[in-house]
Amino acid sequence: MNMMMKESFSSFTLILVFILHCSKTLAQPAAAPAQPAGPIAAPTPPSPQVPLVLPGPAAGPAPFGPTNVTKILEKAGHFSLLIRLLKATSVAGQIEKQLNDSNSGMTIFAPNDDAFSSLSSGTLNSLNDGQKESLMKFHVLASYIPVSQFQTVSNPLRTNAGDSSKYAYPLNVTSYPNSVNVSTGITNTSLSGTVYSDGQLAIYQVDKVLLPWQLFGAKPPAPAPAPEKPEKQNNATAAAAATVDDDSPADNTDKVNASGAVSLMAMQNRVFVGAAIVSAVIFSL
Image 1 (cartoon, one colour):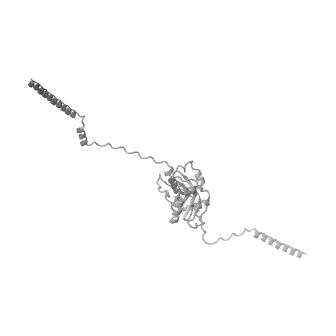
Image 2 (tube, rainbow, N blue to C red):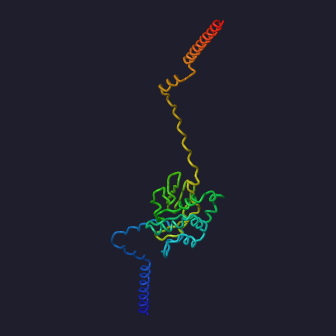
């Protein structure tokens, strides 16, 4: 019996030692993962700034045949007043001819119907046909300019209206990170969307009609005329005038002397005639 108790005690001791060993092993923290050898990789640089993209179609399909600007605007919608003016002034035909005869392309700033409706009453009616044509040409550039290139253009831009000087048809475009501003000196607006772009023709929507200074600005005051310089009298002319002057004292004296001489001669003639008569009477007696 004692032997059995000793064997039981030994077995219990072994079990207890095993349990304590397992508990100690499980309580130890897990080993950290091994670090990879070699230099630490540099952080990824931030992505470059995304270029400005205006709302609207980024690119249009290549048109079949000659490009028709009015049909593009009709398909886009909300440009009925602009289409009417382009047709009435024959500028639409000029644009299409220029597109098909040139490789430089074209850029058009297209005011929508709301832009024309916001004009003061009578603004367009105050213009004659030639001025309306100039107004439409002022919205057209004779080169293709994508949105990303507005930040490098040179101001003022030359439009189809011609002269771009301060008091004629100046058009300035300024590009910002999120917008493109257009200014005429009278109108200040921004491009609000891309209507059409195909690499040759770009049409951008603007929410205001671009009013040029030549047609709607105050004209600078005309310079004052230079004062007239007094004419210097020529000495010879003055002397001649003094000689011809009949009212001078010397001339009056000569007139008096001449009159006295004539009167004396007349008196002498009368005395002579009287003496002759007296002599004739005496002789007859």
